[in-house]
Amino acid sequence: MEESQILLSIIIPAFNAEKYVEKCISRIIPVLENDIECIIVDDGSIDNTLKLLKAFSVDIFNIKIISQDNTGVSGARNTALSNAKGIYTCCIDIDDNIDTIVFGKTIEYLRNNLFEELVIFPHYEGNKKSGFYLKRQLLPEGKSTDLSALYSATFTQKLNEPWKKIYRTDILHNNNVNFPISMYMGEDICMFVDYLQYIHSYSYVNLPYYYYNKNDNSASARVKTSFIEQEMKLYSYLNDYIYRYSLDKSLDVENKRLFLHKITRYVEILMEQKVSKQEIRMAIVQSGAENRIKQTKYINKVDLVRKWLLVNHKYFILTVILKIFKGK
Image 1 (tube, rainbow, N blue to C red):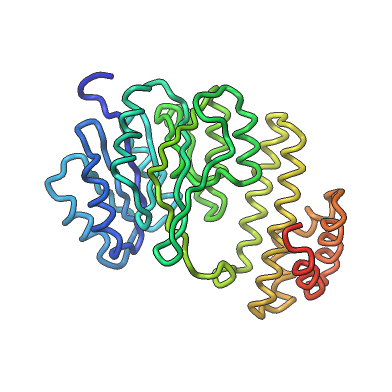
Image 2 (image 1 turned 90 degrees about the vertical axis):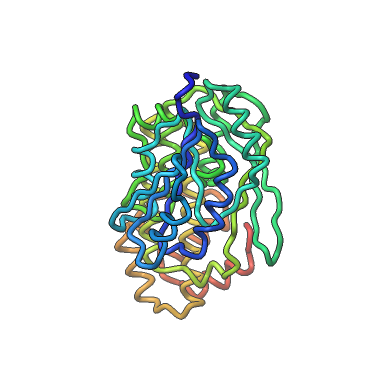
């Protein structure tokens, strides 16, 4: 590596995140050596996020603050990606934490391994109230050229988040790999499967530097009917990808199964939220999800029941059945 070359670009999207700015930057500063840059994109915040970002990063030459109109987290990440100059790029969310000592070891690993195409890490997940636990990936430790394990983990949606991976920047730039801005759910999966087609190997390294702050709020409190449309977009993207690249048929089976399970889970939560049956049905029909599920053949008996109840709009019975067969 040339003396003036940037090793790692850390990209951070920020939107109305004033209460996290100071803590985030204080965590980043200890690892900002001359060959590390940090790019923070303020995505049209209407609070003091931008003002605080500028204040806390003043006189720190390798923190770059970019301000733009609101485009969503994908648009903010894409702006940061387009400005990244490092050999490698990693993502951090402003409301999460990193262990600076372990992250320092991660940077040292990158310095000693300049030709990696993808590096994946375990991470900690949880929150202050309930504590954090180590979440490992079901991948072989070390370097591997067998991408089937990556595809399997991705299509079962166990390898979604961008912050558990470090990417090679030239692969991102040369192949125009971006986060799809039309999606606010599953956009990280779409970006990752796009990236996978350009690599030949990856390394799984046991350096869990990332602490994902999992919101304590119930998932049901955040579900909207628009989530169904988002799931349909994700399903369609992955379905097209499987057939375009002639991937293993088991991935197609898993994609269809997960799609059915997610849609029925959303129906269950929306019913609990007292959303009208008509509104739920409209969201399922207009998104194309109902037709897609009608056309899909399922083998598992519980899935066949899910399908029948869903396409015949027996939503209340569906919620009862889901409670009986929870986890199946």
